[in-house]
Structures are given as structure tokens and as C-alpha cells.
Image (cartoon, one colour):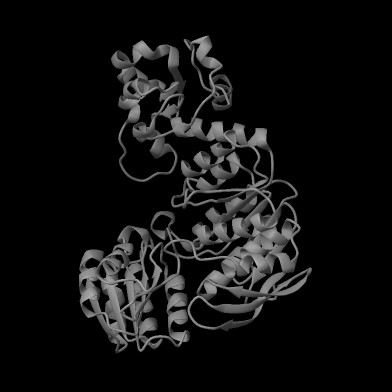
Length: 482
């Protein structure tokens, strides 16, 4: 893609653009000035762009880094008109390489939209309050097993910046057969609607609606409306893949613009799991049932919530024409993504389940049930970080979860940071030994000093709590087996 085509896609202006530069092929699109190299286009993001596009917080004005970007070889910089005026003195020498827009994030999204339209192949889009990244990884893995080349988000690049940056990879390699893209949201600013505007889904997957981001959206009903934007934003004739076990999700069937494929465990869904058997940590078996037949799956991700993620991936694959044997074989070869249920065995004889990537009450309880049902470990310890963005009832939600944990058969709970104090309070009221740690560093110190042979430890927390630091500390203090 050359610069002139990018400017066309962005619907931008560059009145003094050097004609020789217009035909120059773009090396990469960059939003971090420290990463700019020869031939790159740097987008100078600023606070108004972030605020207009649903990002919370205060952000630096990157326009001041444009001059340095040009010195590092940038082919062009994309800047807001108003920010250029504020930095006119240092930017005027580069007018022949400046591209002007009203909103740099919108310009980035418009660019990605243009690249997607030029590519014009199927998109599987996935949203939900929990499990998006795991479901995305599973869906991409299954669809890749059919011989397709699949584009997917790096890590959890699922917002108004990460999504277009992922799609722009198609400008470098248009040989992808399809894209599997997770779509996230955290504010009432119709973020999923905007992402669907970039890449309208052919397959729209909704995993669940949970009381996450209630702090910003006000109620779980508003969370459901925000998630439903992925169904409303799908292509005409596309397929909605919906969790039949979640009443708020299956209710979205009325918004579908084409066929609906349901998935579930408790419901009589189109794609479902039957005869689920746990055979220890990282070992489960179930019968995959689809409209085209059944097939056995040996599954290596722990927890019922991950079986639901697998069923979502299977339903998407079914909608794209894969058969049950092919889907089951692919699911049987899937492994946990980093920090999502990784089982770590230590030479001292204890085992850690690293599920540090994210947390919510339903997923926490599901993983603890896996811990208890595994039959492993003489002593079962749960290290749980506070769960974020649960709204006005967040303290009581933590207390209720603590009481539920106390009744599940674990031996000890360590609550980490902030609201986890209420988790500990609830657990103690149920008779469970529990202690509170102010942060992950303190929890790492405490756990490292008391871990014993044959302990089975679940470490789970929301990203902001950084419970992965506890796993890292254990790996420093104790040798991994093998």
C-alpha cells in the first residue's frame, strides 16, 4: 500500500504532499514513536482522540514526537489539524510529509476499513464479558487445522487501536483466508459498533454477559446491549453464534441478520458437550455434538468455562463448513494460551495453575471447582486478586464469592489487593483460613515462604492486579520440574 492510497482510505488531507512520496510504499503503521523506522507512517495520537474513542485516562500528546519520527526515517506523520497549529514551528519544515485529519484514531480505523475492503474475505468476530482471548485462540487454531491461513489479534488487541492495527497486517500480507478477531468494550461509547464498522462480521460470536464493566455502563442490561452490537453489526446473511446457556446472549437471536447457531452445555443447543469427564489437571474428555454428527474430544484446558469457549470455536467452525471429526481433532491438539490455565509442576513437588490473565466471579469459581475436582494435591490453596469493574455491588460480590469458595473444599485463600479484602472476609465467615495481601509482591513473599510439597495452587487475578508476578517469584525461588 502506498501513501497516496492510505490517504485516500483515511479520507485525509495532505495539501503539500511531495508527489514522489505519494507513490512510496509504506513499511509499517506505527503509534509508538520509539518504534518508527524508515518508510513508516507515524500516527500522532493525543488526548482528544483517546477521549473521542472510548479510552479512559490521561494520555500524552504524541504530536511533539513527529519531528523525531521524521529524523528516524518516517515517510509521513498523521496529525490533527488543531495539534499541528500548536506545534507549527517545529512541524512546518515537514509539511510535504504531513497528513492532516480531525481525529487520528478514527483515521487509523478508516485506514483499516479500506484495507479490509480491499481484502474482502470472511471475518469471525468474538465478544463476551470473559473468555474472548481464549475463544479467539481456540477458533483460530481449529480453523487453521482446516488448512486456512488465519489472521488473529496479537494478545488481546481488541479495542479501537488494537483492532485496526491487527487488520492493517493485511496490507503486508493479503494471503490470509479469514480473520478471527475479538472485540472488546468497556464504556457506553458503542465501541463494538465501531469495530464492526471496520470489519463487519460474517460470523458473530457472543460468549457471555457478566457484571463486568458495570462501573462504566451502569447495569448488566446495558452490558448486554453493548455486547449485542456485534450481532447488530454483522453482515446481512451472516451467522450469529450464541451461548444458549446465557439467557441474555441467546435473546440476541432476534437481532441476527441470518442463521443462528447456538452452543452450550446445560441447554439443548446446536453445538454442545455431553458426557464431560475430568481426568485430572489439564485433562478432560467430552463428546462434541453438532448438527453434522458427534466426535470425542480430549481437551487440555481446565474449567467448564473453557469447554464453553471450545464449543463457541466449534460452532464457528461448523458455520464455516467444518465437520465434527475435524473440529474435535483440532480441539484435542489445543493448548492453554499463556497465563490462562497453564499447569506448572515444580521440582519440590507442588503444582501451580497459572490463570493470571483475567478474573471474574464465574471464572474464579469454575477454576476452583476444577482444582477441587482434580483430586490432586494434599493441600489446595487459592490465590485470588481483586476483580475489577463490577459496579456498585463490587464489595458484596467479593464477599459472596468468598463465602462460596469457603464451601468448595479448598484449604486456604489468599486475597490480593483492594476489594479482595472482602473476598477474604466472606471466606472467613464460612470458616475458611484466609489472609489478605495488599499487592502481588506481598502475596509472592507470603506464598513463597509457606509452599509445601504436594500443594496444588491456583493463582488467578485481573490484569491490573499483576498476579503473574506471584508465578514469576515462585519460578525464581523454586526449580520447575523437568
